[in-house]
Length: 280
Image (tube, rainbow, N blue to C red):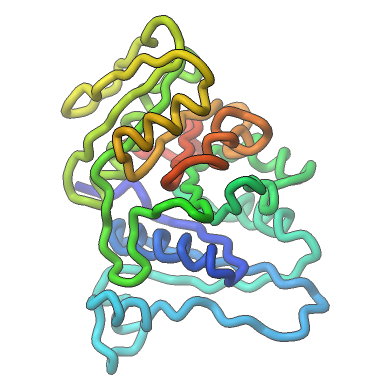
């Protein structure tokens, strides 16, 4: 199977939380055999240079490389390209969205601070302008949530995913993208549950090997989604989002934003339509 993920973008501030997101980005890059772009934005008056994550050290720790291998040799053997990109700017969000405007990206992997939301990274008119035109699937790795990639061993624990669905946006394409994402990482079809909070189930016409189980719930939407994620012990929540705002739709008071804040696991936001095709 050809991976639809060719380029992964991970903005980092070198914090412990960014370390967890970096492990996810690196493991996805290895599975996809694509390009991983790491971006750090430093303020012009920063007193000391910070060091990008040591990819080779993590590959050795994960048992994927030998200690005497150079990073370039190890990456060549594994089929992964890694670019470290350092920019200067007062506003990290502005620098990030400017980079995305100039470079084609298939997947963003980003750390968030849970109840503080993801607006630390994405705010302001520039973000609205760029993410209004660039709809990129984004994996949010939230502080305090259980990730599906072990930082220690690199093992992937991605067995079950919960996908909240509604009448708008139509969920079928997002379901197919989430299924492909799971297959890239695990080499097989992961178990998917669909949940709708309401009185009737929206139509689902996704082309997937097995029609997912559909759960119908009532009450508060966010609480119902989070409770179901805990009940079914899922490793990922996949959120279809409206394409008209791209990734920004996940970040300004929407259901997706509130789910990100309370989710027990990472959240994968899939806008419709996508900027780049995931079908090939």
